[in-house]
Image (cartoon, rainbow, N blue to C red; front, side, top):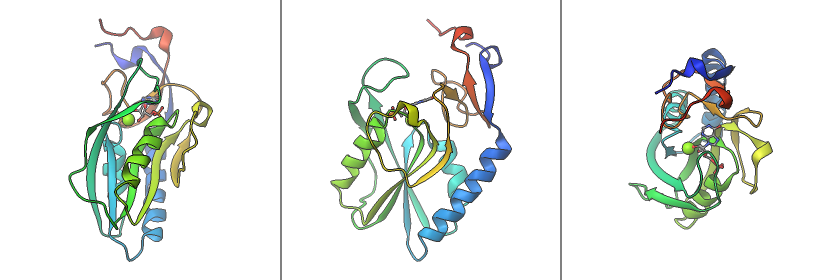
Length: 184
Ligand code: IMP
Ligand code: MG
């Protein structure tokens, strides 16, 4: 596995900026969900680091559940067809649900997940994404809480992977694809 320092282009969002913005998001969400038992749904795997920091900044009572999806098609590009590979554990009917995602890119993932969740009749359904890449959008999706709008560049770190590695880095960095050597 190639050392990320060889293909890191620039650190787009450092640890301090991430934590500062996530604290703000937590406050905003806590204000909006006063007197509610908020149910957080995290999409595996990219959303886990964001979820764990975000939920520690949320002061209203909250529960958490997970789901996983996979998109068919070539690497680093969604195709529009999304399959649920791990379903929720708990029923969401009549509960205020907040979907927590790492990044909205083409929008296909969030669009499909929202359709899927709506069939289960939550009390309310909103989206919180750490990153938003609007230039790549192919389907309109509602985003209620957004950490950062980023340019159309491939990023990794803080939950987002470079071919499954480096989700543990505390910052978001861009990749210089010319210096990246994928494993066989
Ligand atoms: P969408 O369906 O095109 O919106 O893609 C969303 C998913 O693609 C995210 O949940 C990520 O897993 C992945 N993804 C999109 N852009 C990036 C990126 O720049 N770095 C890492 N993963 C990404
Ligand atoms: Mg993801």
